Amino acid sequence: MEQRLRQSQKMDAIGQLAGGIAHDFNNMLSGIMGAADLLRLKADPELMPLVTIISTAADRAGELILKLLAFSRKEKIALDPVDMHTIIGDTVEILKHTLDKKISVHMELEAKRHMIMGDWSQLHNGLLNIGINAGHAMPTGGNLTFTTRVIKLDPLFCEQSQFALTPGWFVQTTVRDDGCGIPFTHRKRIFEPFFTTKQESSGTGLGLAAVYGTVVQHNGAISVYSEVDIGTEFHLFFPLCDTSLTEDLKNEPAITGEGLVLIVDDEPVVRATAKLMLERLGYETMEAENGQEGMKLYQLHQDSIQLILLDMIMPVMDGTECFNALRKINPKVRVIISSGFSRNADLANLKQRGLCGFIRKPYNMTELGKIVSQTFTTDHQTDTS
Image: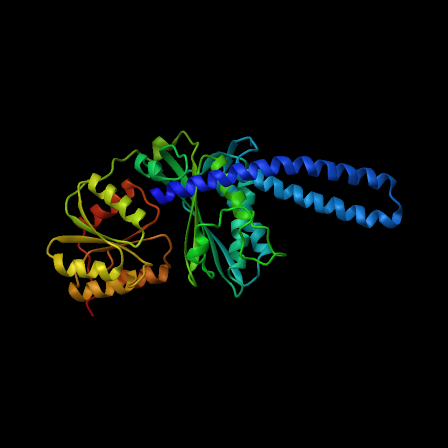
């Protein structure tokens, strides 16, 4: 939570700085563009190419300022009812004709409700930015997938978020690629203005900064999960405006239970959040910061530990290695994989070998309570070969 608070404060400070720069720079641009227009009326024909260069450069600078203003939340936008599925569909059509033909673009739109209050143009541009970046991350081809689902963000989730979220129903839009991934050292900076790993001529570093600003202006949230050489997922959350939700999506209380759950995750924030949720649901918890530590704890307390909530990507020993080691100790061990990014093929293989379930990060208390309860009440057949 301290890390999230520091990151939030840092982004707010950068936003204020960006807004101030944008305001002053806009004033200078107005003078440059006005002077260029006047020169166009009086300049010799030989000088016209130079006037055109000035005007073109000023126009491009103006577009960058719009992105800075979006990031800094200084520019107000008009929010109207928009359909996220329509926006995604339009985005996918453009990407299919823009990205390399070796990249396959897919949609898996599962959200039963998908109307939000938003600005169509900004949302469209935001998804395009993420999609184009994903294309750059797959120079030899791959898959780019847009998915949606409806999720209820509870008060605990909203309290711990760095974004100003109001508990309730959201449409979660996920953009997933299987490209080169984002190194850990870059992950915390990707939403900062002007931060880019591309060559100077290939990008300004404002694309994802503008996406961040758009999400904040829409009272939403954004998170990223990435694994080097495996892929990246961006999760965008926008509050639903559909009042008929109460009919199809009932406000189900979180399912409580009893038992000892071992949480194995290398992220302290994730462990702390899962621990809070599980204990509020009535469970006892133990924690381990990597697979090796989790395996050792299970060896010592296997008679007491009834379920393991296991991350996939960790130092020392990752989730798959830990799962295999746990099954050698107890072939009937109950394990739920919890990850922000996992390939379907990997999960299918683990399920064949006895994996009880999978929950995608970020999750809320209702989702966690449901899958844990299902795991405790269902007999899972395991392949002990």
